[in-house]
Amino acid sequence: MQFNSLDFMIFFPIMLTVYFIIPGKLREIWLLAASYYFYMSWNPRYAVLIGFSTLLTYASGLLIEKYRRVHVANVCSVVLALCLTANLMILAVFKYGGFVLENMARLPGGGWAAEARSHFDLLLPVGISFYTFQALGYIIDVYRGDVKAEKNIVRYALFVSFFPQLVAGPIERSRNLLGELRKIEKENLWNGKRITSGAILMAWGFFMKMVIADRAAILVNHVFDQYQMYGSTELCLAAAAFALQIYCDFGSYSLIAMGSASIMGISLMENFNTPYFAETIRDFWSRWHISLSSWFRDYLYIPLGGNRKGRLRGELNKILVFLVSGLWHGASWHFVVWGGIHGVYQAVSDLTRSWRESLWQRLKVNRECFSWKLLRVVITFVLVDIAWIFFRADSVMDALMILKRILFKPTPWLLVNGGLLELGLGAAKMNILIIATVVLFLADRIRYRKKETLDQFLMSQNLWFEWLVVIMLIVAVFVFGVYGPQFDPQQFIYFQF
Image 1 (cartoon, one colour):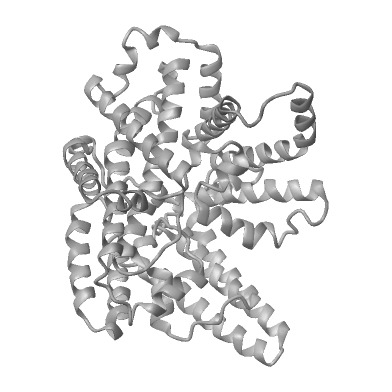
Image 2 (tube, rainbow, N blue to C red):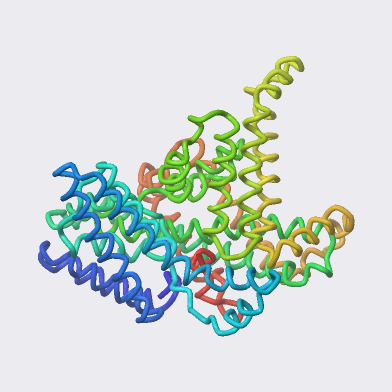
């Protein structure tokens, strides 16, 4: 079930109505049932895996806490190791089994792997990477003593399966989400401010998804699927459009998740914070997919030693984390290369920082002025967009060929002869995309300058303005949202991860 589907438009109001009128003691049970129904709407068999992961991490948490109280550290370590191994093995088999066999088949004597690959046909459960990481974060927190093991099995199962953020994040931390769930029994749900805030976030999320992301996807797919036909101008436009598409697609899911949870009295963490206003690659990753980047920092980078074991080791750890992040996104080398590029970006930035600081001082560069900051934002966006080409392309070779055509197949005349309107979008649809992108820029500018999310900003304005904007967003979704034969409600990009 997708947020932008008719099924969800029926499911959510019914679920919400029951949730608001039942006794507080039944809210967690009702949400758990609704979450499993939501998840099983894709494939009922998916429930087996998420149920197994839930029971395993729940029992492991109780065991770790029990043996930590009697100071049996070795048992705690063994339980943690077994729990992590079992969950990661499930993820590896379902997500990476085919990838491993495919690469082993290319090695000498790999005929057996090719034969096995031809029979390997496991369906990747939607959202498995998200809920696996969320459950593993919980068990590691219990092991470290950061949180107490949750004894209420219903509450813990809801923590793993809470439907707004189940299949595409944000990847919540146990301290936050379990704490939120503990409050809902006695929570006053009839809170107009919180409901309004959630409704604004959902409306803005649907606008980003259906007006911007799905429209940009038409152009992106048209060019990337036949990139051999195009030159630098079309490919640069498609790369920039993909940067827009993936931000609005993934960011919209997080916003709708935050908004729907807010209406239910549950606060989720913000997952995106104006990433394309970042002035450095490090700054970009503090604003993009915040829940995942902070997860890797806390549960992989720091345990690897962070930067505590010397500068070079710290940079190698950083690159390794980004390589793993790339693999997390997909079982393909082009995702790994995408992650590696971001790791190299950060390593080069760190290793050349003192040299660059000295150079700017000698050149007497004013680093506080608008032009300098604008230049840094543009350079960061270009670097991020180059990496996005590897993310979007079907293979590493395709990405390299696209970069080659950008460099050696100039087509500047398309900027003035109207050729850019022949890339899947006509003049009218292109104009809608441009106007919607300007609206997105203004909203992100408010978020960047005022440090307020859109709902906070609108709710601080006069009531007429707040409702005018919300009504305009809703009308825009219904009038300018992408529907018809080119519309596929299954295409939230991050569902495949």
